[in-house]
Length: 293
Image (tube, rainbow, N blue to C red; front, side):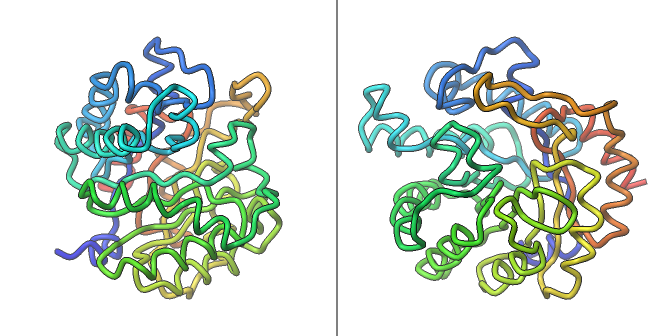
């Protein structure tokens, strides 16, 4: 079955990778976040991928979200070394037995390590963002994932840049998911429907949706994007907010039931569902039970 058709049928995505590493005792200080583990303890990443696979996830999202040439350069790693680490992120997911491997393409704001991916005001033009994203996207595609997970995109200019960039790679397939500030808008204030329509305009994009946003926002966001012509997906966080200065998540209320939540996301139009920061293999197992009976 082609990837496009699988996303129309519906898949279960995995859950939080970095926060699961932290839950298992791995410390993730500094700007590289989980990408540091690629450099120092890659087997731990494979272990987390295996746990999500065992929980029932169809898709493994790689540990490349916060990997950047600038960030690794500050650790003394040159461009060729960064390319090898990006390829390693794909191989670890493949080695863990993932059905589909989605190479994570995090936003420009993630490389700043200041929480900009939840705000989106970069002061960068579309052309500058195209140029920034191109080397990493090329390196990840060269590593042979099944598709790209372009995720936590906070700004319409960055979505435009990535859609423009994807045009240069006819064989590439990707999803684009946005971080959202409320039930109607992505993080920079653009209506979600407008952002989703832009993402869906690319023939390379097999799904559009929302990630790393509170679960309560998801149903309204998805309903607003009904009819964009591309399958929808949702993989929210636990409703926590990111404290960029302290580099911690602050919980907002009781822990949500993502199994029950995933049924609501499906009812609102999501074909594929999963979890983001703070979610665990237990959450993905609950989503599998809820959505697969």
